[in-house]
Length: 440
Image (cartoon, rainbow, N blue to C red):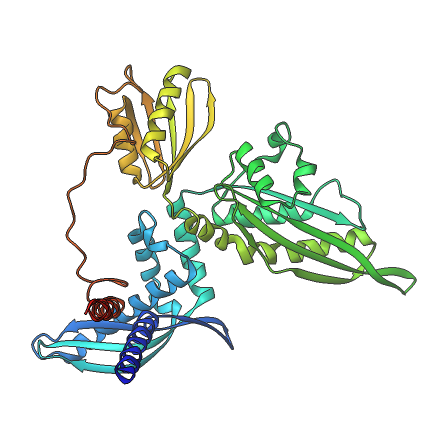
């Protein structure tokens, strides 16, 4: 009996190991080699061999394998990107640059099956930097140009300069990438900017960003000081060390993303301030570029609980605005959220996080008396009609209609006839057998 139990245990362990390995089989890896960081994966492509044209089929299969490698690399770069609204548009923009991003393509196997389909499996190397240069702008465009606020605590020998060189340089990089910037000259009327620059708690920073209607806030510290001096031809020159480290906080979730610390040395400064400015002008763009697209990726990854749709409704009264906000709260449900950005001069601006697509939100607003005038990937613009917020029939989100029963899944990662499902069946059988023996 012990021998049988030991054998069964070995079988179960083998099945569980096989299941684990099968889940890891399609994994990718990031490796650092000469030329930068590479995302390496096994990609598959296939194509039918028509009229004996094997070379044509091979070329088509290779193109498909290139795309498979890119899609895996995108998934490795941005968590949850395949769930992003309009992902197909973003993917196609990246696919159009395939040749410049996939740098290595080593065929591991090639075969033609009985149906005349040629299949290629290849080990592909995707340049992380080249992918970032194409994927970043595509994601930003799909997100609809997020609003970013930039606040840097800059010090030169422990003194705060009147104008922050670092803030200006970081703003330039983010604006060029396609972000919308919060105007700090107006933001100062709502929050204490000097106090906000010194904040470290992500929750507090997220609250500041919400107050100023920013999707993300970029903060950090920039510090410069002299490390030496020397006289050259009667002129005293200073050596100045300038260092910068940035971090971003996503407003919705207070998720924090950090950058690498960047340090620059200036050896021929006329004074400490001169060296600090020159050092910050070199260090700030480098630090900003290291996170400018990662910020967009974090906005995607931190919206997995739902999509954020920005809504603007004009010609609306305060009472109707409240009714619309309540209706949208039911649409969002317990897993989503509603955040009113502004109500001013008869215009309501509100963000809704829900599982609905932008088109779905627009349809919902239309059913609630809003005349929809424009829809983009992440925004809905409309005008309140006479019955706005007062639909004839609106099913409460608390009492959804009963969904038809679904058939049990036949396969999957952890159930059905998958590897874990097989292990579960064996475990169940062993348990039943044991109970029968105890009953006997």
